[in-house]
Length: 90
Image (cartoon, rainbow, N blue to C red):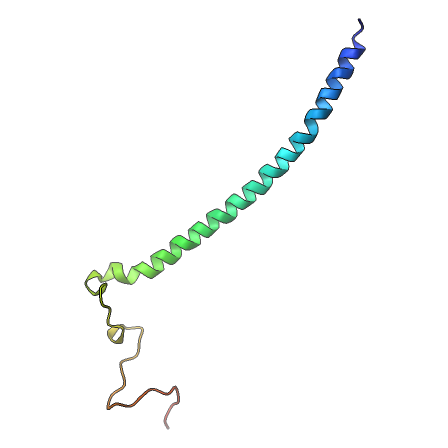
């Protein structure tokens, strides 16, 4: 028996292994991209959670019933029963 049939068998096995290897590499690349996207989404959710809970963390006594009218980012309630209309009086 010569060596050529053995070399041919090795070539066939190598060829049969190359195609799935390339497919697996492609899948790995796609999964790495999806993993990065999911990680970024998780980071954004953590930032959102921190932003939402930060006021509560700073002042836990008002966490149960916040009075937004006293919050520095909100204007005080209108006086004398006037309603805010969004128009400025001159």
